Amino acid sequence: MPFTLRNLVYKDILKIGHMDIPENKTTCFIGESGAGKSTLLKLLNKMYIPDKGSIHYKGTSLGEMDAVTLRRKIVMIPQTPLLFGESIEENLQKGLLFSEKSPASRGDLERVLEIVRLDKNLQDQSEKLSGGERQRLSLGRVLLMRPEVYLLDEPTSALDEETELTVMKKFVEAAKSHDGTVIIVTHSMKVAEQYGEEVIKISKQ
Amino acid sequence: MDKGIIDIGLWRFIAAYAFILILLFIVKLRGISREKQIVIASLRMTIQLIIAGYILTFIFDNPSPWLSLLIIFIMELFAIFNIYKQVRYKLSKQLKCTVAVSMVIGTISCLFYFNIIVIHFTPWYEPRYFIPIAGMIVGNSMTGITLGLNTLLGGLKEQREVVEGALMLGATPKAASKKYVDDAFDSAILPTLNNMIGMGIIFLPGMMTGQILSGVSPLVAIEYQIAILLGIVGSVALTVILFIYLGYKFLFTDHAQLNI
Image 1 (tube, rainbow over the protein chains, first blue to last red):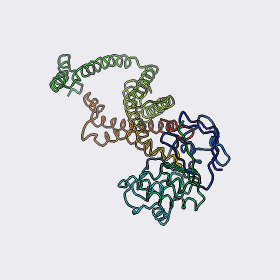
Image 2 (image 1 turned 90 degrees about the vertical axis):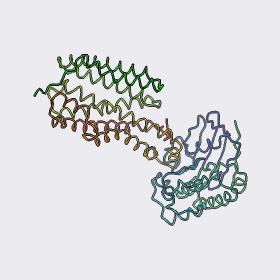
Image 3 (image 1 turned 45 degrees about the vertical axis):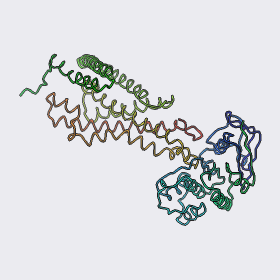
Image 4 (image 1 turned 180 degrees about the vertical axis):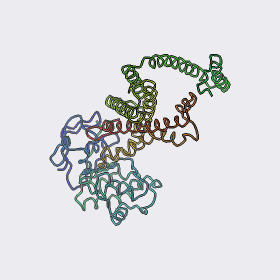
């Protein structure tokens, strides 16, 4: 189990007695809005620190791990897709740059654009991208980083259902091809049913 | 030719307040409710400068290292509290402490370097030099650090999502905040740099004008002006760099989370 959560409490938002999240699988968190799904993702990569209880990653308590080192293994995409730079290429490379890894080759960048179904040139301006395109760009950015765990907060909420399912299918395949664990917060039952090998319902406190 | 400065005299001095009367008239005419502030500002300026004039006369007539040190201590204190007041964001205790340390180290080291190495006056506490130079260095550094702090905290607050997004991708706090730190440094140093660019063409700076009015040769006045501007740039840059170097870690928690 990469993640084991015990007696976790975070403010009045989240209370989890016991939860295991399996390795190399796709786990989907579902639940009504305000149930604490996004908070849970942020607790898993130390953007938030629990008030009580523990989170262990591969047997080590997150409290003992350096936050930056941890986040290079457990990468998160927030709900709002973010731009880091002007061109699509700059945006894709930024994750690698932040985590101090070597830049990706042109071939890798183009392959990633294909996986996330973003039909754009590397030199195109990212400012002009729509919300859905920005979400796909964010997915491409983390895919290049090849982390151990992907934490995705509503990563395809701005896409139509058909594109959403195609993009997620390709993304999950690519992540799994290098033994990545994928954890998705989703509103889409279809995504959860189709790709969630494990579906965990988070209920409002 | 008499190079001494003309004493304005009481009545002509009072005549200078005609500018304030004109301002009050315009403000009244336009319906801008600023009369009270204009009157208060004019009165405060007059009273403060008259008091400063008497104090400086006393200090110049009785030079003492303790008096010069006391003056710089008061200047630093006023500047530091003014920074706290002028920054639009709430400062934590650690940040306030960093501001104070950066101001004191940055300005004092530049002041002594400037006085001892560049101007080289003796004794080191000669108030005629020590106090006005300290005023220019401390005042400009105060403005610089205030601008820098407002830009840094404003940038981090407004772009919180982007900074946190970078942290989520494994960026160090330093990398995640680099853009905002660079912007802060720019905004702190740019007014002084622009000042240098416009110098001598767009305007003649206050100190130089004052010296020329007092009968000093423009060439000597220019020497002083160039030297003091270099000193100011150095002090503003050093103060802001010190603040950023010492203070940026307080903007993040031990767990590399944004802490503002």
